[in-house]
Length: 434
Ligand SMILES: *[C@@H]1O[C@H](CO)[C@@H](O)[C@H](O)[C@H]1NC(C)=O
Ligand SMILES: *[C@@H]1O[C@H](CO)[C@@H](O)[C@H](O)[C@H]1NC(C)=O
Ligand SMILES: *[C@@H]1O[C@H](CO)[C@@H](O)[C@H](O)[C@H]1NC(C)=O
Ligand SMILES: *[C@@H]1O[C@H](CO)[C@@H](O)[C@H](O)[C@H]1NC(C)=O
Ligand SMILES: *[C@@H]1O[C@H](CO)[C@@H](O)[C@H](O)[C@H]1NC(C)=O
Image 1 (cartoon, protein in one colour):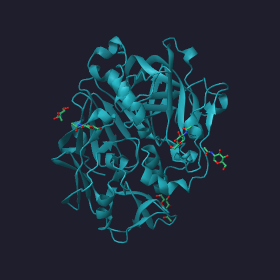
Image 2 (tube, helix red, strand yellow; image 1 turned 30 degrees about the vertical axis):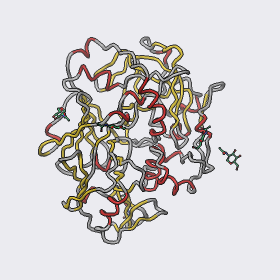
Image 3 (tube, rainbow, N blue to C red; image 1 turned 90 degrees about the vertical axis):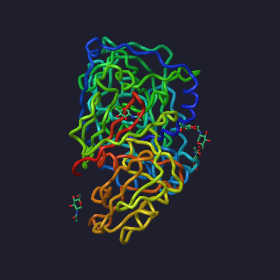
């Protein structure tokens, strides 16, 4: 799944000044403090996985990084048409076409979610993508035409005795690449890893973009960024609903969830506890500035092979489990690849590539003023570029002056990361072996 969540920054500003969402009631059983785990598994139905080019394109459009997007506009081939039930409004942004007007539709396979975790909504199990870069919990629903739900688990509200319609509420996630979803809203019992929230806002898609339709293993998303990014509204104004994490936070042993991703991208999300056996040394904590709605923090220096250097641009960084790459300020990426024999920034491929047999130095990014999070050289490669596996695409890439550093899976595979919603901070612990 892809998403241009910065697209929502406008919505977000509105949301910030509007009323806080109604509190959800919780199951009595969930009132006992506890923790729980949920696996993240590889999406075997993903049409072909993400290659480097797609991964760059995805993040460029996800965050609407204008400078980065330019290179991809010409390469866009098909539009990501909305599939919608009759008489349902289409998402206007989805028709904003491939004409190079600023929003560009991506190929369906570019958008598919690679990693999924099981979630029960009103007793019906769906495979959802956990995303720390957005805040909507939306699902495929039987309001969609049958053609769109084929191969998916679609939530049927009429078969849930606990579902309640939220009168007049709607949602519309129009990702800047033309993918998206829209529909109605209700509440239901949502259970993840054995812990349930009684009145979780659940967004029922009655329109989804083609990319979601084609990725038959993805039935929706669980947004884990801050609730102010939630797109639910009553037609007149934003009425942002709480995320699952916000609702369950008070019931947990500790108000945290952790992302523990393996090199192949599978792994575990754990809520309520920080498993000390999953990282070596002490966890480095950095305060998060949640005013953007993202898990955003300062990252003003970096290191190549242990040599710490100042990052002159020092753009803010965000931790995003929904992005594949580690996107840093351009000068940082250039500094790194200047130490890689044969590396070049190749516009056609969409970023920095190098011979796969090159020796890759360790890389580190600052997490706050005092700590560094290291990505060992052996964990830097994202994908091979050619069939013969001689040229590799780096998992570290430049943001071309976009003004935001986006730390995705390249970082999560090397760092065990704790998201603390209590004191709004992120904890980083080096994973023992990768
Ligand atoms: C299409 O994109 C352009 C450029 O970003 C924007 O100005 C326009 O409002 C969009 N139109 C629709 C219908 O979303
Ligand atoms: C894109 O171009 C086609 C043909 O050139 C045109 O029919 C269509 O209206 C354009 N769409 C947008 C969103 O500009
Ligand atoms: C936040 O809480 C954690 C415990 O979960 C603690 O170790 C850390 O120091 C705190 N961070 C900040 C920035 O207060
Ligand atoms: C947090 O970020 C916002 C912009 O997103 C900025 O205006 C504000 O000054 C920041 N706060 C701190 C404490 O850095
Ligand atoms: C290239 O790597 C892929 C994935 O690891 C593997 O399946 C394929 O056999 C390799 N091709 C060659 C020519 O080594």
